[in-house]
Each structure stands twice: as structure tokens, then as C-alpha cells.
Image 1: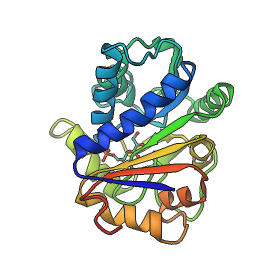
Image 2: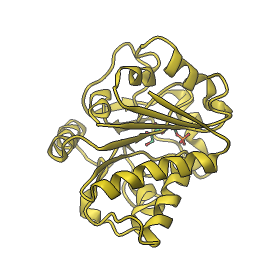
Image 3: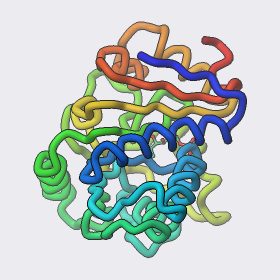
Image 4: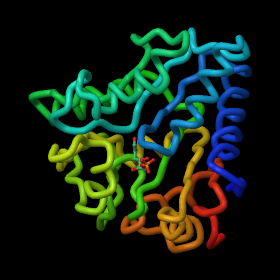
Length: 241
Ligand code: F6R
């Protein structure tokens, strides 16, 4: 595990974007696993800048996102498909046909999970999987549990996750209480995983995940078992390391 403690969110984002850009320079056909939420926004901004400057291209890149709220469609401003279009895809030379996010409106949830696992399988191992981390140690929407889930599944969100994500929703609008999420197996299958964390609120989750015991009660702790993880955090998130 490589750990970078950066001075600021800006520096964290720069570091992550540089690593992702190097991957795209080495292989223009890279497969990227992507995350949403506030943490990777700065990284995506830097990648957009590099793309606009002609340093990297997404023309042949394929992407697979971690998760999507159950019940939200692509036009809903809080859906993760909307987020990805708005924060990355609409601003770079990617072919949206090469981007994948679970279908939050799928009427048959189980069939959607199966379909998404087929997508993941058909793409092959992601070259880089980007992750944020929940205050409770969740990765994607794999919440603390008594077991690690392997495949894509529908997860009931914990109150702490719904509370943390309230900030993205209009006043009075309810945060969906379930989501489609890639399983821990899908995440661990990536060749390289970049875990990003910023802000003091993440400090305990980062410490427990990296220095604590491996347990599904702290889903991100499973990353200790992956041979190629890069943790990049700002100094507040990394203060216990
Ligand atoms: C989002 C995702 C989540 C977030 C986590 C942190 O696709 O998978 O695990 O990474 O909830 O969210 P932020 O970055 O908003 O603090």
C-alpha cells in the first residue's frame, strides 16, 4: 500500500489526476472504475483540464461506475449518472456509449444486478478503480455488515450514509434508502485501487481501514488484502496515520 498525505484537497486531487493521466498515457484503451460524491470532483476537474490541454484523451477509454441510487433516473440531478455526465463525461472526449452506471430505474432489481455484473465481466479488470470512503468505512455502497458481498447487489443504506448524503438533495427531498452497488469482489478485481479521502470527518474511517483489522464492519479494511492500493488523502483525513 502506498500512502500519500497531501497538504490540501487541491494537492490530493492533483496527485490522483496525475496517476490516472499516466495510466491513460500508457494505455489509451484503459478501463477506469469511477466513483461519485464530493471527494473525486477535484480529480475530475484536473482530468478535464488535462484533456482540454491535449495531454490525455478519453476517446478509447471505457468506464464503469460503482453505484447508483435505486429509483433515480439519469435526468435526476442527484443520480450518479447525472453526476458523472456533469462532472466529467460532458467535458471530455469520451464516447458515452463506453460509460457504464447501473440503471437506477430498472424495474427488476435482481436482473439489473446480473446485467451489471456481466458488464463488469465483459470489460475485464479495471486498470484503476477510484474510491471515496464513507464516514462509516463504506466503499461504493457496501455498508458495514457481517460479510463482504462479492457481486453487484441492492444495498439498504444506513442512516449515517443517508444523513451524510442529504447535502446533495433539495430541501425536503428524501435520500433514497437503497442503491445498486458493485460488490467488494468487483472492486477488489481492479489492478490498482486509488482510495481518496479528505476532511476530518473521514479520519477515523481512514485509520480503521488502514491500520485496523480486516472486517466487513469496516468495508474499506478489505483493501489491506489488495496488492496494489494507493491511498491519497489531505492532512485532515490522514491525521491519525
Ligand atoms: C460514490 C461512492 C461512495 C462515496 C462515499 C464518500 O460513488 O461510492 O462510497 O465515495 O460515500 O462520499 P463523499 O465523497 O461525498 O464524501
